[in-house]
Image 1 (cartoon, rainbow, N blue to C red):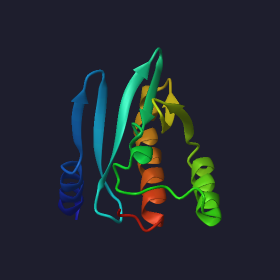
Image 2 (image 1 turned 180 degrees about the horizontal axis):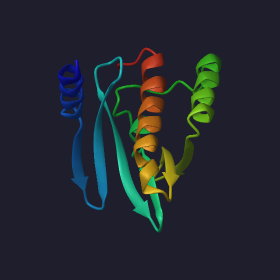
Image 3 (image 1 turned 90 degrees about the horizontal axis):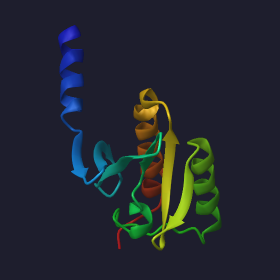
Length: 130
């Protein structure tokens, strides 16, 4: 049984990919949306803080989905996920960025998990595809 568990962990770990993008690292997670796209998050530092962000990809349409915030029900769900995962947002370069940050490097995996789950939830809930 232990060999099976080790094989599961080894297989799951090979699904993760990391791409260097200047001073930022793109983390391509094994989390897939319902439109068959893998979720990416971006890790960077700002002063003494580690920031994990969506890189503006949600607002840019990278996930082939427009977020229908004008839909009253979807907007409530979106706000629920923002609060549940404690996601912050800001407007920059003409688009919304969603992020979490910490000064503790041991919490970075938690932030990656939270932001990936948030992205998956809001993208997969609504029927996407242009």
